[in-house]
Length: 141
Image (cartoon, rainbow, N blue to C red; front, top):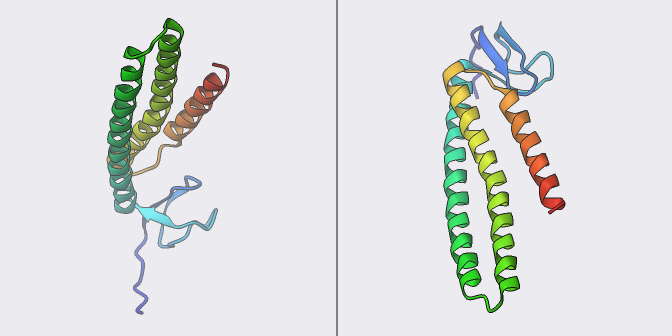
């Protein structure tokens, strides 16, 4: 295996946010791999593709669940049973919304990385906060 010389380029650490023109392959601050602009953009493309696949999968599963639960609500024998099915449907849609937000986070993060060639930790933290709030709301329902 040959060791090719590494040219000094602007490199970004996706873990700690270190950005500097260096020839190192590992971050001097945290030791994790650091990437050139092209490397960050490639990771952005992967994030975008994963996010799109995630969103389509969640939408398909949500449509299937809505079809099943709505059919059960229509065939309910009592009003209480229909209301129970409607509440189940509401909770399932709420949970699907949380999973969709995760997919959209991957999409927006990927677009950000493709355009600006650097990570955006704000999108990640907002998604985590949204998911935690959603889980708390589900717990109290």
